[in-house]
Length: 30
Length: 443
Image (cartoon, rainbow over all chains, first blue to last red; front, top):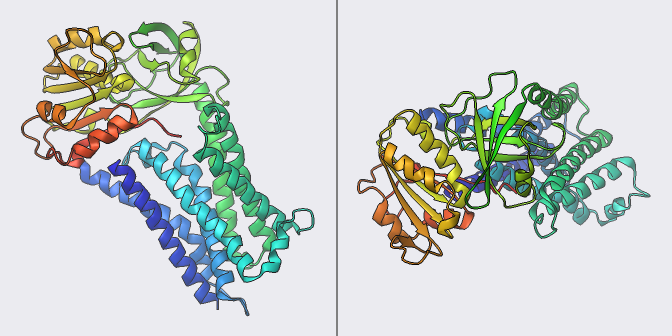
């Protein structure tokens, strides 16, 4: 359960990093 | 050893981030297109990141030992499920943002009138919705595991191929040689992965068959399959690990299931698995005849006393058929004459269905082993522990000294039991690094 929670947080964290990069990508393309 | 595992764990997480972020970083380099607006490009970025994550999903379930060993196979599957939801949200956001900014684009959903690039994108998303829906609601949809796996393979391949086709046909972001090399690289990597999973690995397994030499009935509707390698050395495992077993159909088929070894890791010629009749496949194990060929993929898993060589002793907590990895560890300790103290808390519904009861009594004489049975429905005159494995029971039998690294705790059993035990561990003074759980409910 604890490790599962960690892996869920990791998935969300990676998602946020990629959303951040998508924003950077969009800003750079303007 | 622990530090090395943590570093390996961090390394693979970084590799994952680099591979999924690479398309976005490469897209940022190079000429920009005039007149694009923020939301449109942002949605494209989400689509690219989502696609890179989808393509990597195949790596997570491709059973690469080097990737799984730092975490444990169950957690890699858990991550596979969680990250698929994250990727799904990002991919769905891609067309949704476009529709919100330019409602006229909704007409692209009509696959009859839409251009090919939109057709590919829309069908990819439909495949993705079906893929996620059939996985999250498999049990509610009464979709049998083997069929689900075939469907899962087809839908996931379709979703990725159609999405790549969509990228190719839209063509806006593959207009420089660097970007073309990146996408060709992704495509080649992905095809190579599928060739490995579907062709090369099955061929290796086919060349290393095992023969069933005995099918033995155990207490508690369980059956032990004893296997011996045919014309090869067999596989060496560490006690507590598991392997995927193909029994019925061709090795290229999808009828494979993960089972823990129940035999001693010190036995060189023979492997045994003990399987309880639960679902569709497990109910057919008793029909297997000696002489039948089976194929194994393994060993996998990090749930093992051998990963803790310096421990002073161990605590095993088993529920029902969750005893199988513990049996492998106990039998191995017997064969090694390992006299470190072991406490086995073994929960069952009824005394008559306690798998391996007689052999455990023998092991108590041979090992420094204390066994505590916890009966949900105890027989008349039962003086032992009853009910569920509660905090009070655990407190009574866990070692007095619960200092970090001294006596690791291994638990395998039904999900609710493992959750309940894990919840009380911190209160009982157990360091969570000493708590090791093996979960088999993969989907």
